[in-house]
Amino acid sequence: MLLLISLKMYPRQPHNQQDKEYSIQMNINLLTNVLLNPTPEAVWQLQADLLAAGHSLQADEFALLDAFYHYLTAMQANLTSQGYTQLASYLSIGAAGMAVLEGGMAANLSLLQIMREGLTVLSSRQYIKGSTAEIERTIRDSSWFLYRAFWQLSSNTQASLSRDRRRQQLDDLFAPLQDGQTETAVKGILVGRLFQAILIMTLHAASQ
Image (cartoon, rainbow, N blue to C red; front, side):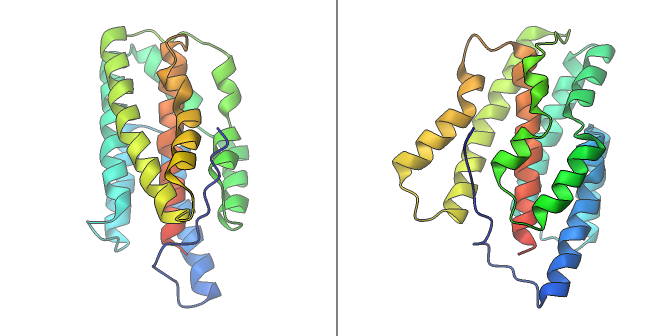
């Protein structure tokens, strides 16, 4: 998971440092519900908030929101009520995670920092009950989308990185999702974390 991505190379620039800090804080505020209460309703609200804040319909974050929304709704439909509540609780980064986020976004956040926060849950191997075949298909489809999304982000932020090195980093990051020995519940949590991470990084990059 050692995919460190600089967030300095996006073109939109605030006019001054004060504008930059305000923009970062605004994005943190917008993301709060999706990070603390990751549900389809929270993603819907984030979409409305971003549109109201003036984000372009063509912005990268909306494609990410589409995929994250479909992931959450599919998981909600195929998990038991208790299972989905369990998943959402695992994906909530909590108050400590929000503190890390606020410090990290102001200090050029890396994917590694985001992925570390709360990922100890992956070692718990908790079983989440639901329709396994449908859940596994949702995980596969989301993983397919996320691999390309992270490739694009890495290309935008690490243009000097060779394609072979970029592929190795991404293959390492996504290895648990391709490993047949990784339990479905763990894969589901990891996919959710990857969606949260790339949303954070994309909105952070838009603030630079």
